[in-house]
Structure formats: structure tokens, C-alpha cells
Figure 1 (cartoon, rainbow, N blue to C red):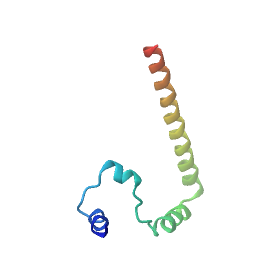
Figure 2: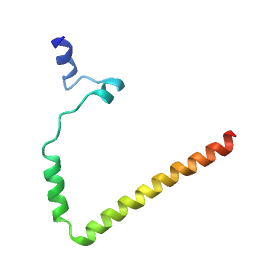
Figure 3: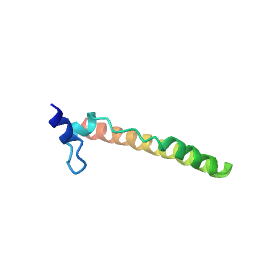
Length: 77
């Protein structure tokens, strides 16, 4: 059992799709502090641009999903 676990943790070994979906990666402890530092370094206009870009990107993504749904439903029946 321990040999199997060690073989999954080897860095050069490729994981299967199923294994990569259901295995848990090690948490990155530097991610949140780095993200907070980057956010605090932005001025207010850059923050507004960032939020607007995220909202517009979300609207485009949802719109493309709805458009694809309507096109597929029209062609299929």
C-alpha cells in the first residue's frame, strides 16, 4: 500500500485523468498573501478595470453558452 502511494507522489510520473480529478494537491501557502499584496498595490482605477473586465468576461461566457444552447436546440429539433 505504501509503495503505491509513493509511486503516485513521484514528480516525473504522469497522473491519469481520473487521478488528477480526484487527488488533492498541496495547498500553496504563499498564494493568498501574494494576492493580497498585488491587490493592495493597485490603485482604485486599476481595481475598477479589473472588476469590470471580470464582469464583462463572465457576461460574454454566459452569453456564448446561451447562444450555443439555442443554436444546438434549433438544429437538433
